Structure formats: structure tokens, C-alpha cells
Image 1 (cartoon, rainbow over the protein chains, first blue to last red):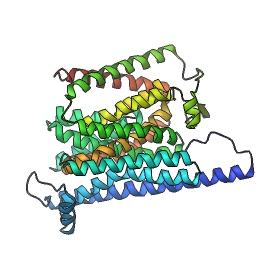
Image 2: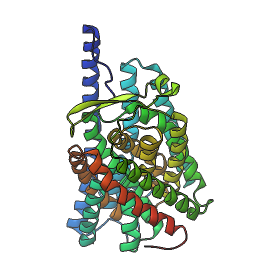
Image 3: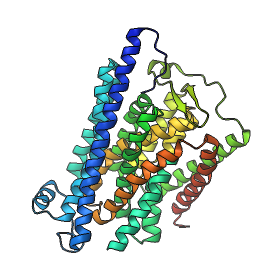
Image 4: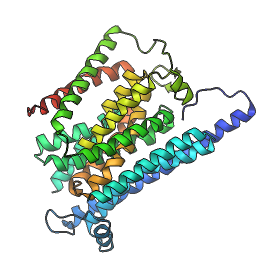
Length: 133
Length: 281
């Protein structure tokens, strides 16, 4: 978030420090989210490299929640890769969710609403995607 | 298979570095490489491309957040436009001929390349006073960032919010339709229309691309357009490349950025324009 004013009172300084703290926490949450998705993808890719198999017949890969879930239970490499890719798709959504929290902490009600609206649009998009298959 | 995986990781690394530096999603690099060089069906190229867009954005925003170059309010406000546009685009896929969008897009990118070239020739870097409109003040969009290259904090004003918002609807629409980040489009909206400096424009565009792409990525994911053996190595390469790219970017001056950005914009614009007429270069 833009820090566009200098702190004038002790109270403002404290608030700015608090915001910096929140931004650091958000950065950490996002980094963990990205790292987890990357790690899951990497595990899947390494399994393909070392076993030489994808867990499915040629040109087949799981695309439904059920197929991916049962593939993961069976430790099929492509199912693990697809889980990682889906987690990666969710990282921008996580970004929006933690931003709502940050704006709420800042008591910026206008932006809590704006960001919540963006989240609702994203959820509608997922719903449409789910219907569209 | 292993050779292809390695090759795709390298393509991803390059796309991630360039994507982070220029604020483009990497999809504009990935799609031509996959279709022209590797002969992949455009449908799967688009699927891999949308993953590339998210990987570029997620990899880079982690780094940008610490730099305070990102303008989160601008990003969130304009994402209302890009996500609505992306969903409309995803619904419209298959209805509108993409050739029309290619031509329109190509023309706009060519215009922007020319516009940036003109600005650079004028020889000054953002010293003009910007009149913030009442909307940008009401929405608290004006911000500041710390520029490492000149070693000082730069305050900036944002103007023409309705123009930028409209441009973002189009950017979202194109993103949903073609599976691209349309980051160049977003940078145009902020840099050219809303008069934001290039560095915060690029950083903000990176965040917005990920959120916009997420709106349409689930459609591609569930309809089987995302091939794991293509998208996975690209995503890994891009995540690393994007982090490297954002570190390189901090040490570049805006003029150098523009000098690299202009031919890239021009080339992609020409490519997209000609593709609309079925000509591939």
C-alpha cells in the first residue's frame, strides 16, 4: 500500500508501523502459498522424470476434482501436477482475500467493499467455469 | 519427454524474466513459442499461457510488495473492470472471431509503441504536472514509490480514471478470450491513459494480471485445456524467472526500460496484427 504521507503524530507513526507489519505478513502468506504450489508441481514433475510414467495412458490427464483427488490418493504424477497447478491458480485469489483483511485493519471501509466485490466476481467466474465443463 | 521438460523450463525462465521486467504476463512470449516453434495446438497453448500469466504475477508480486512500487488501491479498483471483462471474454470465447481482436489489439500495441517512442524522444521522464481528477482523489489512488535508480521517493498523481477503467474492461475481455495477461494493455491504461509512472504501472499490472487470469483460468482448467506436461515445467521456470526479473528491474532506469519495451511492444503488436489476417511472422 502506498505510504503517501509522513507520520506527524506518535499515533500515526504507530499505525504506519502496524501497516508495515501487516504488509510483511501478507508477503509471507503469499510466498508460502506460491512455494507450496511450486513444490507440489515440482514433486509431480520429478516423479514423472524418475518413474518415466504419468500414472495415466498416453494423452490422458485428470481434469475433474474427483479424478484429481483419486489420482493423488494413488500417487499418480499427473494428478499431483494438476493439484499444484490448481493451487497456483488459487494464489491470486488468496492475494485478494488477504487484501480485504489488510484494508479492514487499515479501517478503509471503501476498499474493503471494493476488494470484497472483486472476490465475489472471482467466485462467480469459478462457478461459471464449473458450469461450463 | 525429459528434453521437452527441460526446454520448457528454459522457455519459462526467459518468459518469467521478460514478463516481470515489462509487466507483461509471459503469455505473449509463451504462446508464440509453443505454437510457432513447437507446433502445439493453439487451444493448449492458451491453457499453458494462462498458467504462465498467473506464475509471472504470483512470482513477481512477492518481490514487488516489499518495494512499495505496487499501488494496491489502483489494482483492486481496476480489477473490478478486468475480472468482469475476463468473465465476459470467457463466455464470449468461440462466439467472436479472435481475428478481430488480434487486429484491434495489434493496432493498439503498435500505437502504444509509437507513443512511448515519441515520449522518449521528447527526452523527459515524468516531470509534467498531472491534474488528478476528482475520482482519483475520492478513491485515494494517488501514491508514491521509492525509485532505486535515482535514489529518491517519487510522488505521483493519477488522472483520467474513467478512461483507465474502460481500457481495463477491454484488457480483461481480451485476457478471457485469448488466455493472455494483456499486461501491455494494462500498462497502457495506467502509464499512458492514467499518467502513472512506468515502474508502479508495471508492478501494479503484474498483480492485476494474476487476479484477472484467475477469473478465466478455472474455465481452462476444468475444460481440459491445461496440459500438465506443458504447463508444469513452464510454471516452474516462470516462477524462478519472475523473481530474477523483478530483482533486475529495480536497477534499471525508466529510459532503459522504455528502450527495451518499445521494440518488444512493436514486435508483438505487428505479430498480433498480422495474425488477424492469417499471416504469421
